[in-house]
Image (cartoon, rainbow over all chains, first blue to last red; front, top):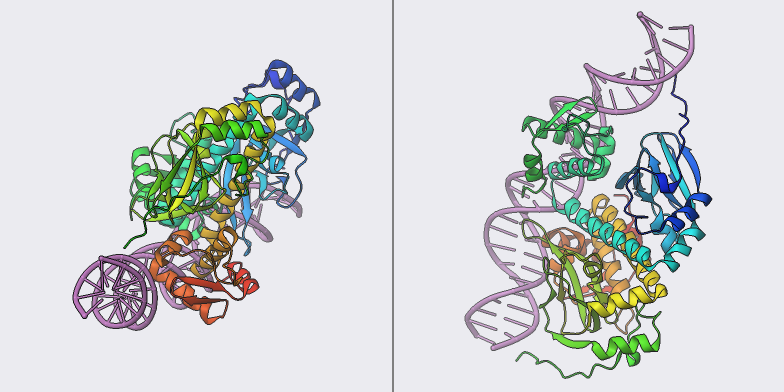
Length: 238
Length: 238
DNA sequence: CGTCAGCTTGATTACTTTCAATTGTTGTGG
DNA sequence: CCACAACAATTGAAAGTAATCAAGCTGACG
């Protein structure tokens, strides 16, 4: 039988162990202000935290779990835009530009999410210039990544893009204690949606990378055994 | 003989007729502060305003002309990321994140550019929360656009991407007085670099769009005669 | 008016998707 | 614990799309 929601106690923001580049410039008082007005929410695996087209009313802070942000193309094909792990902030772009969400955030594992009122967030932006500079720099980084991702998808072969996708997963979620196996379980189809290709092509590309001894495959687990080689593969001309 | 640099008088920022969503939240005093410390620069067609890898020291404001921002892939293939016209601000992303430029800006026509000292820019960000919110919202919009562009490139056919590219040119540079001909001259190869394809495929796609009577071609000029049809073509499934 | 760069076209090749069929895995209920 | 259903992974073959290669063509400019 399906595992039920585990009862987890979410600590106050000041006591949160998650590293967080977003709120690091806030004072204890400001953190308290967020903490006392936040509410926690549990999202079961495969449920949506927010949905494309809906209006943003809150800022989400991922306390535990893993989340993918994706967009659905006209033909129903999904494109994964970005991943989030514990400590990451979601949904601030739409909040800031006061537009509907342009993408959907889905919990890839059971996740606990802290939700912070929009007003609270804007209040701090207005009052704390250091914080808004922080937000600006985060946006700048995401913009740079997005533009690089564009080049990758448009100029690399499927194998290169799959290599790139594996490196992204490694950078985002890291390894299991063996320091080789990626700490994330995804279907082949989801990996395809990162690289912007099909399930079948993904399978064939993974098989190639395995033959080249850059990765090891065992069911859904993927281990990177030759990181340098994988980087080379991601940047190869052909 | 090649036309020489025309002598143009660049007015003070307060008297600049270019519409500008970037500085609109500044007071007259703040504008003056920028204006008195700026310096103007002329860039001949096809010269670089800034170059990938170099460090950002200034903010650029395009007074006149047209600029393309592009990145070179490993194999030397260029990908155009964005366009700028008079009134637009360039180079703020790298300035803000304090990283080297991740792309190169090239004048597509002879262009006059006002250059604003980095320190001045940061000073205003710190002192004017309304301005920084403005910057944040601009970045948010560019991020959204970049993510949409990713979906476009990864999921659409060459014809769809070329249609998308033409719509982008129309939205950025608009029409000549005839309200049909795009107010921009580009080579086929440059159009290919927007859509992430080759010159030959671009020519064939343009020919198709012409056969479908969505556009008219005459040398380098491109006229959109069926805008709705072109939008449909950009969003078509096949 | 010759040259060169950009444009165009056709043919070939390479890569990726699509389709179809099979096998493997997982969760569920008897 | 087994059997089944549903989903995921895999493989092979065929079809489609776009890139590449190889000529010509055209038009602008010195």
